Length: 422
Image 1 (cartoon, rainbow, N blue to C red):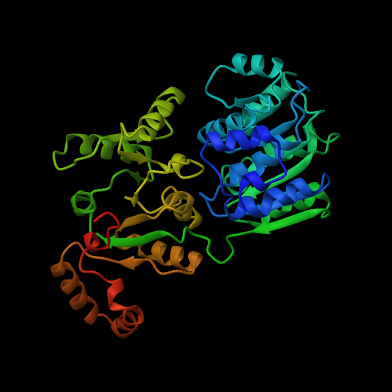
Image 2 (image 1 turned 90 degrees about the vertical axis):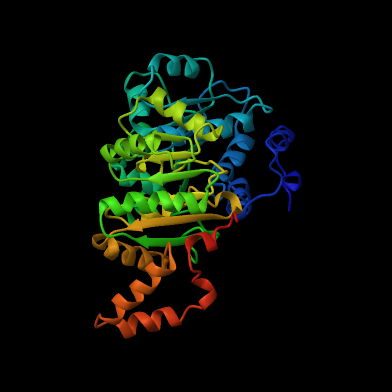
């Protein structure tokens, strides 16, 4: 089924054509008809990252809103400024041929321009929770005409500590309005479900799940490479870059300090045949916007990032994800990192550098995904040395059995042999 077959406004179809979008993804195919079907239902949807959740809620919103009413009619809450800009960009394009205006609302920039756009008749507000509450407390926004409230990346909002803000917006600022709630999340934590149950009083909920059997991006090939110390990690990483020759990659680190150090080191390293850039929390909003713009335009081909970039960013051309550091704590963060590649059915690769202390985290990630992450070697010598090391360990039989359960063709001699780009 094509979008042209949907019973939606011609202006929406025209916008989709201009965007080069013609066929719905799984989440769009399941969510859009349900949202269009009834005015009293709430949607609780789980879909893995990169599957098109933004259009899944944006198309029905643009279909239902009244272009002649110059009041805020839809509110979309997102956890980060980057995702705010991305969703705003999509819904603005979608609504322009219908006569709907949107405004992006987030901190770190002047609030006055945002207030002006709301007063000028914006019907759709895409906002981070903190700045939205600031606008509400200033009486710069009213929710009395809101028909839809969307929580996008709801699990991430809870991870970032936004639950009190979300509670205030849904149960305080909009308590007498009661718009339809569309809740979209990559992972369905109990706390996420509780928001929907409390809001809807456990009534009129349509649950949609297109990711239960495959929580991670199935088209992303995943490997890890074990390193012994910091010096070996950097040199091994450079060798991986030389072998893989990524067209466009994101390198994830855990701390802003190490992000700065790695960026400076790679810029000076003559072995690095990539245009290196940095994205981390200490940068100003303007600096972050420039970095993301340069990455999208391929002026930067290797983006070093902390987890500020792990969610919501839709950059289709990313071929490789490198976890220079494994994420600390929650295994779900690994899933969201690797979700920056393999966007919208494309194939990608995720490679992690793992020291001895991080091996337990690899196992936790495998258990969480219910999927093995394969180990590979830069050279045949490393592989043979590793076999000898395992033979001396008490658990050698168990490890050997595990490897024998996988076909030999799944274990090429080098990571380069597995590359999807040559």
